[in-house]
Image 1: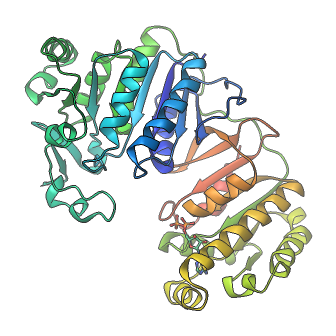
Image 2: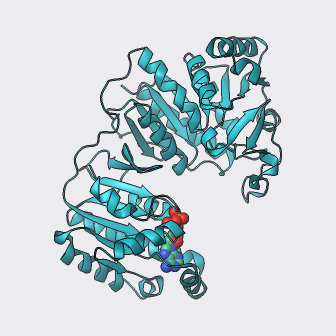
Length: 420
Ligand code: ADP
């Protein structure tokens, strides 16, 4: 039985939430995009639907979120969480207010809370104002974000511009007194006609107390920090099975690493692997010459897979990337690499690869799409923020999807050593 159904407005945010839930003891599955009506309800305590709805038009974000909610309701969830960024990334046109509003309406509820607080990364809310470290959100680099410039740190005001209903504040003075005071403050806000309550919090303890006080809220909204306090409620209600939440089905077959990330950490990881195991570089100019380059890479891997893990990478330092981009155009260079990695992944899995490490957020998206993977069970962390996962439905394939600057220099080897 799925207890918690979450809707996240972007993919890495969803993964972050999944990680938090697993660490709090919930068996968690991440659905990539709105789950297909045919996706069987997995054996999990939480399902997190990863959308890409942060910066699309509000009406589309609402539509996708409602479709996700419909699937989650059919899965029998008891509580719902709408997850957005801890810097409340949105514009006056939405999408946080409109999506929360639509979810409340669909659930027949009249009240929800907003708490983007993530103390580990310095995101706190005091008197309704969001701080990033020691500066107001509006004085942080988020001020000049290309898509969602945040120029007002008052979340009450930000949300007021995104919804027609009353916005209120559950202040630090109540939150700091613990769950009973927070519960009272929720009731008072609700009685005063507040539909959307921003909740102050500075610490992990506050988040856990807010979670405690939210046991009876059908919908909670916030960053992944708000999920810390919810699992304790389910445990208290004896809804969680005991045992390891991060257990994955055992993987079989060969292992391979595909890297399309050019981030500094990935370049170090590629260099580290190169010194120890076979690796092949593919480059966009060569890929532009036709399918032969991909075929060559597949044949190269095929010959070596039986002897242990191999790496195929397009990762390159900035000057090389720039050269490829000025020759082919940024989009074309990226698409060539992503399509190549997708085709190579498909071929290698066909050849019996059962453990695949993929470096690069966009690259991972392309690979997962090509493999037809629609949902992932989340396992143990390899390095902070990057868990092993296992495909849900179809033959079990273990996947470690690492974006950008995550992981230590030995990440690839480390991942393969602790593969399920
Ligand atoms: P990260 O998570 O590090 O940002 P992504 O996969 O999201 O990695 O993005 C890297 C992008 O760079 C991808 O679109 C990939 O196709 C592209 N790319 C990879 N290698 C090269 C290269 N050698 N030249 C140009 N673009 C490249």
